[in-house]
Amino acid sequence: MTDRKAELAANLAQVEERIASSCAAAGRKREEVTLIVVTKTYPASDVRILHELGVRHVAENRDQDAAPKATACADLSLTWHFVGQLQTNKVRSVTSYADVVQSVDRAKLVTALSAAAVRGERELGCLIQVALDAESGERGERGGVAPDGVEELAAAIGAAGGLRLDGLMTVAPLAGEYAGRQRAAFDRLLEISSRLRAGHPAANMVSAGMSGDLEDAVAAGATHVRVGTAVLGVRPRLG
Image (cartoon, rainbow, N blue to C red; front, side):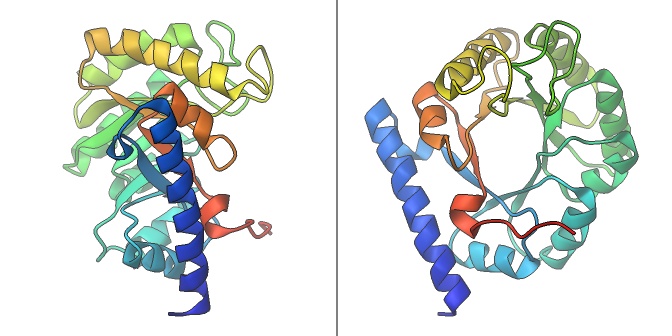
């Protein structure tokens, strides 16, 4: 086993233990929570090692990094998640490799994603990114739609060709009433998810929690956690 593979295996084991312990504490089954490894800034070689170690879900946040990496790993059985703020001029590229876009936060993006998915004869999973720091009608500092805009966006995704409404995503906010209160933020996301599922029962995916707060996300009921640093190490600086 190479040094890098041994390092990633040890880190994965630690993250797995954290998830399993959190599930046990919350009275949940371990299989209720899916680990997504955020591989941004790391090379395709790391993605290949992660696949060898059993990882099946990976995430990227920049198309210029993700597209060549996905191409280099096209022979692997992976589900690719796009988690970054997405500009419409990048949509055609992103829909060529992403299986799920977790950062849908405006109607214009829904229209663009739908057109690209239909053109590429693909079905693209969509999560609505909820900004818990945004006032009504506004977007969050880190992207996302205000809670009162979720239903309208859900209806737009549900009516769009090539798209599938899978659920909700959030990033713990750095400002506003939920700043520093990750558990409260994730509880709020689950409330919004419960309301969404009343009209869209298949939209049961809740993506929340990262390396520093995955325990709070699992306790709140998240179905997916997005972990980067705890698996791959401290990220190299971007140029």
